[in-house]
Image 1 (cartoon, rainbow, N blue to C red):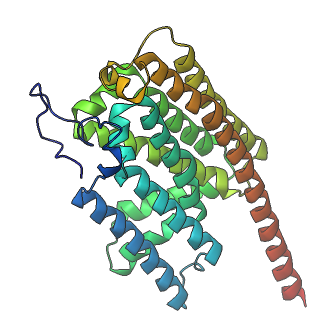
Image 2: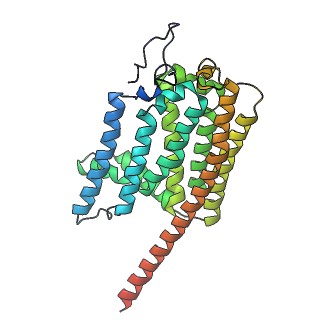
Image 3: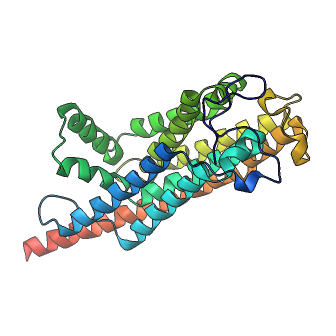
Length: 305
């Protein structure tokens, strides 16, 4: 079980959110059973399922429910995000920088695109159905929908920039260290990395009439900047994350080797997955465009008949 985030370590220092660094023999027992986190995760799943059910029953203005395949994508993405946050990977990421990188890659490159493929916005139908309608919320929701589906490449560029800034800022030594000293900083790290990744993936998967060149460029640039950061960490001549200095030896690694392994994960599989998945998102978007065009042509033909 995860130790309380406000508990004191041996030197009287606050423990990281996921507790003290585990030894190899105990890591598989170190599940993060934070009740608030677990409640939030299941609330998200319940809201999504309620939104799907509501769309199935609706005969009004609500959009069609996600397909069975999309629903499976959402549930898979939710399960992967849940495991990344509550499994022993949480505690393992206190011991090793490479484990923290693996956690981030699971959230950004696996869970985020699966959730977006699953039409995660369905969960917000529940809020609308119980009558919580804030004018500003509706205004920004409308603007976000227009940004995702619009012709301009600027929202895609902005999403890419947010994702890039979050990745580079939180892997800088100072902010990274802060995430071990403060629970607020820990969740700011994960929320900004995961949130910006979801926003970027929603843009990449949206298709629409936006320039395909912009989508290709965003996908390639996302993988390139992630690979470049990973390469910098891999070839750095000195240790950048002293927070792991005392915990890597138990895992048969020096702090620099652990850093190099984390950089390598970000560089090769991380950068490659981002580019490959981004190009796959482009293909999906093109297919969606074709389906929309075919539907429009069919309606046009039907109306003339």
